[in-house]
Image (tube, rainbow, N blue to C red; front, side, top):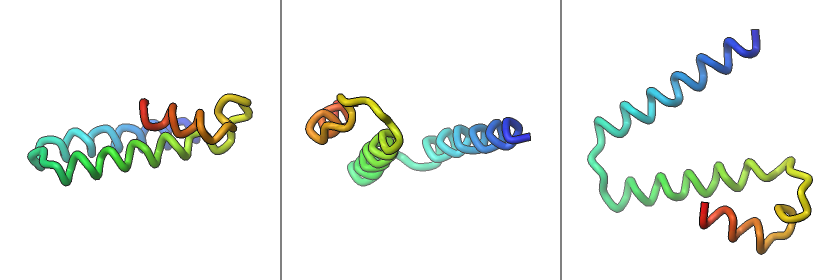
Amino acid sequence: MVWLREIIVYTVYMYGFILFSILFKPSILTLLIFFIYCIYTTWNLYINCNSKIINNITNKIFITIFY
C-alpha cells in the first residue's frame, strides 16, 4: 500500500507544479523561489548518501549549484 500512497503524492505534486506554472506568470521573484527550492531539495537528497565525493562539502556545493 505504500506504493499507492507514493503514486498519489507524486501525481498531486506534478499536477501542482503544472497548475502553479499555468496560474502564475514568471517573474524574478518566482524564479528565485524555484531556484532556492531546487537547491534546498537537491541538498537534502545528499543527507543519507555514503559516497566520498558527495560527503566532501566543496563537491556537494559544486554539484548542487550546477545541477
